[in-house]
Length: 284
Image 1 (cartoon, helix red, strand yellow):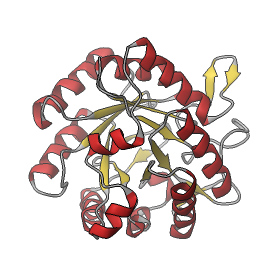
Image 2 (image 1 turned 90 degrees about the vertical axis):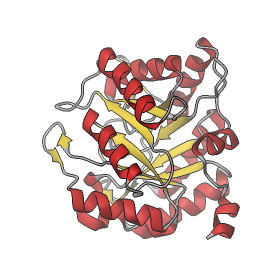
Image 3 (image 1 turned 120 degrees about the horizontal axis):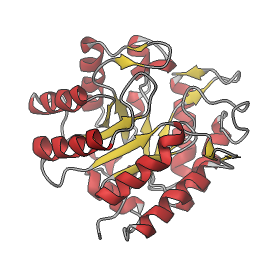
Image 4 (image 1 turned 60 degrees about the vertical axis):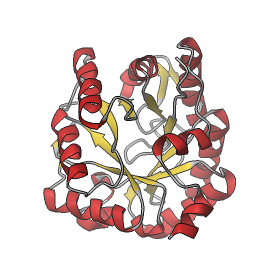
């Protein structure tokens, strides 16, 4: 299989703390350093959240701006993807950083259950986030926690709410949401290919101990893979992951196993139809 595999590293998230794993990067400087290591290991996308000093989640645009500046300096060419997830704030606060014009941002187009609460994504907020991404030339990554989210992304694409062929990420293994199920995974792939075309890019993310499983399935099936300390703080049952880079390296090894090259940042941008940073600014 010759098509390059894009590796996305989700460096921090909203939940893991240094109590869970001391390697979880909290401050902006820690996040930049951890991302740089993951970039050198083979990641071409960074999925980023920001935190307050007490490690609680934040949607502060100033923190996102500082992080973006540092990533552009130390990881030139890497695709920067901001999270608009619901744990970092409520309502339009979740998209307050989109005016910074990152390359990408996550977009959850429907609600679902999380371990202890409902992850609410009401239609009016989804429409507003999508409109902000269009206005600022930010490519959405559709976070599909359920089959209906893939179908909703297709509806939004047809309506012009999403500019390019959607990049869909299957999220599996969240407690009370979609479990890790191979038949469902394969049906997700067929659905993306039926709705968006046989060559439409897609990604998969496994939560917790299922991260390695989804990484393997995605690489073997020709998709792209997400890893990182946001989703899983361990290498295995007995060992904490020493860094985001170590989790990226595990995906790199899977790419070797399945005879797929690891996508460079240039290849990743080409696959996803993204401008390089300076070109994007000139096109604004």
